[in-house]
Length: 331
Ligand code: NDP
Image 1 (cartoon, rainbow, N blue to C red):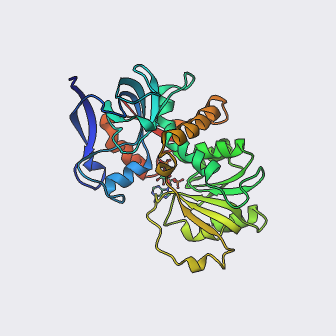
Image 2: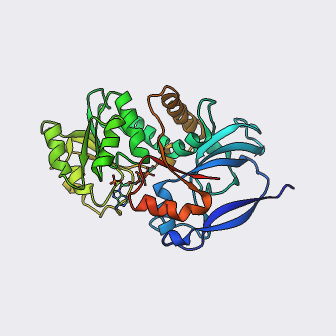
Image 3: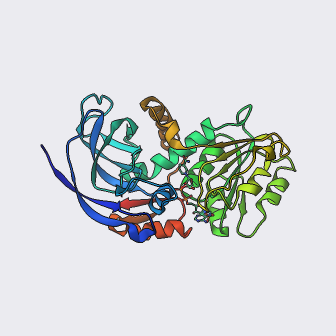
């Protein structure tokens, strides 16, 4: 049996970035439904921070990371959509992408089209599939139509810059918020119709002004605690609050009774892993993502690169809001 060694990043207890440690692991052969993949690059995501800190409690010790690209090195029984030598990329459940080589379930792994490089593949799968399900599958009554207003928080981040471009390609008027004027300029450059610096401006008042008092059809909110209350008040009647993250902390419990007077609004909490639970849905969503990237409508912007062994610095930068666009770990 082949035994391969790999550098990997593990945590043995929840806590700050200092909990991330570089270890050597042994990787075996893939079992039924699995592949072994040798990574070319690894994507960094805010969910990695939640799993490290314990906001999302995990079974420990664990290997972090949910996104990467690489070359398929071995294929287990029953895997038909991948072959040895294929270029591939994925957003994975379970975690474990912070490494050089791993064995993992094949169903979440997609062949990477020739026109998409490994770094881009590693940066775009989890974030791009998230933008896909938010803009294409998480819809208000009557759907989204060209010209409609949506509000997207943290618009200059990894998911944010992809969403700005994709929303523009769909003809939507995306109002993007971000924490500095420079980040707002970046979101605008990438297709946001309007931008609001929510560190210095009242975003609720500005959304009212921009939409002529009507409000937006959907708020896509990954900031959580700090934006929740005002976000609900940005919605038009029957609008949809799509919560998908908690970068500032979790949203406090609330009574559904508050939603009626705000205009019979809808609230949902979405996670990518429901959308990519099957091979079929994963591939269908990835095909749409690959198409918008290959057409040039969505460009994957990698603004930060850290070596795998510098992962602590990468986590610190992400949590300190010092990053824009995507961040990858290089091998
Ligand atoms: P980002 O690159 O967007 O980084 C997070 C951004 O959140 C920061 O840059 C910052 O932008 C903003 N932010 C606001 N308040 C805080 C705070 N107190 N601390 C830190 N950051 C803050 O990360 P990702 O692209 O990886 O992910 C974006 C969001 O989407 C995350 O919340 C993530 O958990 C969520 N997500 C959810 C998924 C799902 O399916 N549910 C899947 C993928 C991502 P600024 O300075 O402009 O405010």
